[in-house]
Length: 126
Image (tube, rainbow, N blue to C red; front, side, top):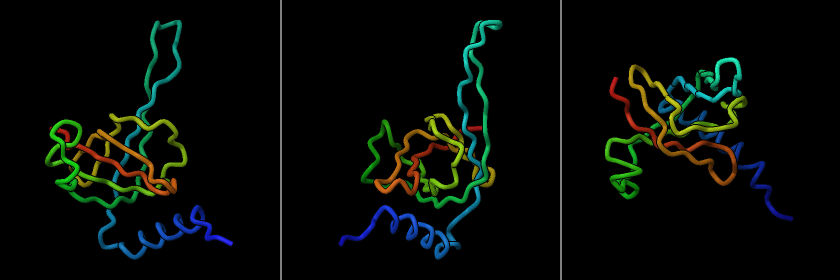
């Protein structure tokens, strides 16, 4: 009989968020997705869905900075995957607003247990 990690890890992530409430901040996540081709206009449009999410942020580790894909000043943002029930097609150009700062997603991955999104974001000059 083994341990059901697929059931245990999401529970631990949720407990971790609760225990880390002093470092969890509210953010606005704007996800843009393409709409279907419209023959009457000759093009496709885009829609933006904005969700309020709880995030944990930290500067990226110097060990992952490569100067191209990940740069000094980038932010690592962790978001529970359950906060994105409606998002199925992640985009590198999605935007996250934390306070007055806007960050653009440059890299993302889902952790192996499918519990959290680990995002690398770069501050947008606005």
